[in-house]
Image 1: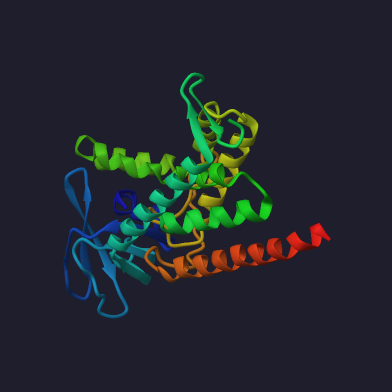
Image 2: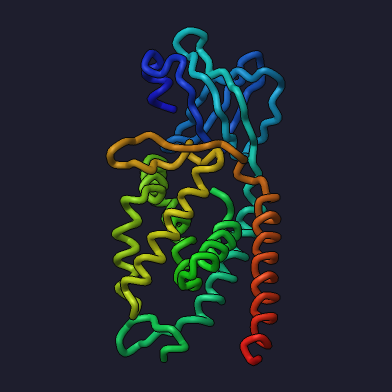
Length: 121
Length: 156
């Protein structure tokens, strides 16, 4: 994003896809959405075709066309604000299942510092 | 990325169909998401560093040596390396189906920095988990029925 904002000519009319956590936003014809960058706020001008439902802390994933040089905005074609909380729960569950399954099949041979199949041991 | 549970179920299905060691394949299928451990070091990392960390953990070129290193700790090194590598590729392939965090998967890094994303679904569409779960249950159920019906025939 910094590259696009710093060198808009190079990205003009290119399609961009990115995801970042929303830190702040300001409503208007052009939405100004802030993302974190090295403890700074990177404000990105976005133009939606209708009022978007943004929320601070949500992960905004968007696909848009870069028109920073000509219109000063990224024209958003498609966007989504994700709540990743449930994903973390599913991830934790998956990890527990995977570790349990693995330990049922493999055991650590501490002498040779290697994992071996329980059926081979 | 799809959530870890979806990756695990997809890994289970592929390893079951292809006859790979399931435990190794499942371990390999969660490897790329080990990048989440960066959160432990987040207070000490700049955003750029976190981004670089995420970037490299999305590239096959980083995972092949990592799979090789991990397979050293297993008795059957060739089999484990094969399982880890294929599982990682499966993980990255699944990741590239969605609107990916960061914009896609840099499959060709370091030849190209281009990220690939088919954008078929958003990252919190959990119906995929349900779909994967149903397929998995059907697969395991079918296998159990087949094995159950094979048993008596063998005896005849």
